[in-house]
Image (tube, rainbow, N blue to C red; front, side):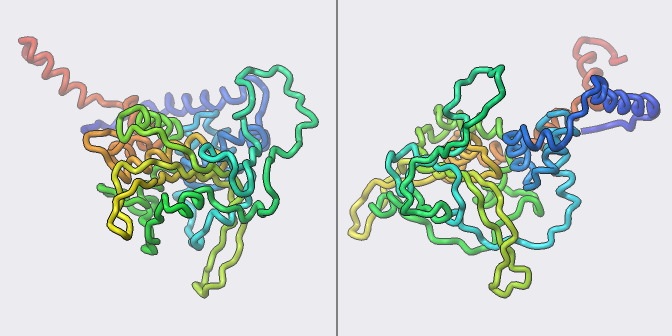
Length: 356
């Protein structure tokens, strides 16, 4: 694609920037980062996930600076992330160690530890509420068996494994590919796919997950084995001694979706049998819809169907990226004088003119 350098216009550009900043203060009310952090938790969760940076203060600042534009906020946060040194890598973490704040299963009514509703808008009316003075609403939304600790709850998928209906894949201890350090390559590895999906634009991931279920791919109705939201402990081993240090908790949403396998598997006796497979989703913060859609797309990309858009890793992973897609669309506003003139000349020539 050809471009031409733009000369002049410096004063106009500077004036445009001043006007943009002045608009933020025109009405005399100054919103603060603390207000955003206290009242826009769901928006912060989405932006942290898409930017791959777990920092609520910086996410709130990016929202303020971007005037609530999610794509711009993600762009700002990713740009800041690229300036940070990577001091340590966390050790492998197991979500069985999560301190669970919310945990529901759509597949089983009675699960070990019980259904834990936690904080969720799922049970509210989708009506604007003029009265925002909520008091006395701090009851525990838990229907659970306390024979289990909230930081050691078993997985619902254990049900299927115990009955021989699900077989775990062998553990892969190879170092995962890191798409923040090296450009993703196609065909992609599963670690690249999972990273891309969790960084993907929430609306795009949700839309493609919905398209997959409707018939543009595997087209199966998934059953959500478990959605769990909670605080996940993180550790580092800076000296590689096997003695890891606890550095804090991060809030995560994890989804394991059950999918009936489209092929039979052979057991130890040589007989074929039906089994289940899973799709997996994990995001920063409480972001359940995206995590569910991610689990659908994870399964679709892991078990591709011919000629299905949602089984094409390049189609899915490049188009869900917020910075990639918004950046390209936005660049169309920039000068394309040379390219358009060449197109214009060709169109004029087809009309019988001399191109002048």
